[in-house]
Amino acid sequence: MDISVVGSGYVGTTIAACFADFGHEVTAVDIDEAIVSEINNGKAPIHEPGLSGLISEHAEGRLMATTEYTDIQDTEVTFLALPTPANEDGSIDTSIIETGAERVGEVLASTDSHTVVVKSTVVPGTTQEVLAPKIKSEAGEAIDIGMNPEFLREGTAVQDFLEPDKVVFGTENRSARIELQKVFRPLIDEVNPAVVKTGISEAEMIKYANNAFLASKISLINDIGNICKEFNIDAYEVADAIGLDNRIEAKFLRSGVGWGGSCFPKDVRAIINAASEQGYEPEMLQSAVNINELQPRRLVELLDKHVQLDGARIAVLGLAFKPGTDDIRNSRAIPVIDLLQQQGADPVGYDPVAVGNMTEQFPEIEYTRSAEEALTGADGAVVVTDWDEFATLTTEFSKMNQPVIVDGRRIIEPDDIAEEDAVYEGLTW
Ligand code: UGA
Image (cartoon, rainbow, N blue to C red; front, side, top):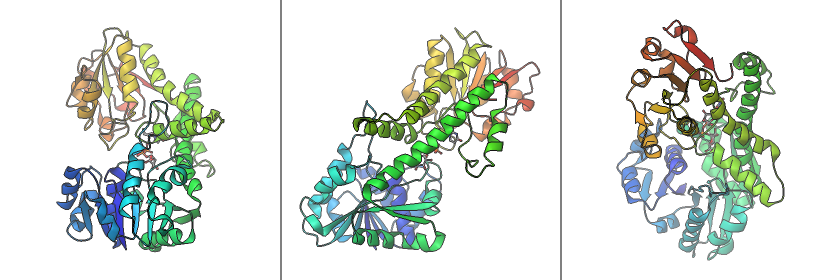
């Protein structure tokens, strides 16, 4: 098929490269010339395992990037993968995707058939009430609309896209559904995911429900983990046991300092805001957010029990929102650093890849090039990201001025800490 993907960000670039890999002819449209030329030169504009291989394989063949919206006229299906960032109040800002929808509508003015699929995460009603009228403004009923939410994770985007548990086709009619099925046919035949055929609003809601459920699952295990800590119980032993119940399942049961990233925080707030505008206040989801905000406070309080924080040098191990990425958006390290500063402490940050990004957020604090350097002379340490390399720390703790370690991710093995009189505290164990 001939497919265009508007927006070459995280999701757009990944799906464009993967569609080309399915055998489709793909046109990636982006207003950023640097991104366009990078893709055309066979390079990935973002770091994601497997992506640069796919782009370099297909760049001079089935994958072409352009800044020209008019190029979508030669395609059959267009995916809109433009950002929907958060407003101050948690609602989503649809201005970028609305502009994209308008331009798509303009260039498709004289088409006699085209399917436009919204890939971006948008609150229920947005596709039909806000975007579709713009997309159809000129060509009207010649255009069919679909909504196809994306469930890939940062760090495993290509693999998640190519091996999904499910694909969701939200469509307004049969012909949009058939087009989506044709696009995904190679994947459906090869990996046999569940295919959910539903309405457009349902597809929009499935994305929010999926993320809200997972974020709440983590907050629930964090709530239980906090109870465990009060009783001196190891929450990980409890989680391992309850995860054996296949109604609960073992994944996303790691308790600790909470969830971050560009999706869970934004999406949970957006759906709370959207529900609230309809007159419903979702109490469970609000609690999930509240617990997530509580966890960094509990981490710093736990440290405060052992360390006089005012004037203390505190190593902050891990700055990225999760391992495998340099993304610090909504990383739990941000409130941790804030809270430490409020207590008069001097946080010293270390992360294998995210120091550059965190320096923009906190230019005033010290950063080091190794965990060992951050620990040297420190009066305490907190672990915020579960990078594998922290699991191998042993003698490095002996370089601390005062070996107090509070682990927010269950990554340090306390028996491996070489220092005999070290204090090790797990946030929920
Ligand atoms: C998340 C979802 O997992 C994807 O399915 C979804 O497509 C994506 O959002 C999105 O909406 O685009 P992502 O934000 O990349 O993906 O990250 P996750 O791997 O889900 O981790 C999110 C946060 O939860 C991280 O801060 C992680 O440390 C935390 N987490 C995860 C826990 O605290 N405990 C766990 O057991 C699992």
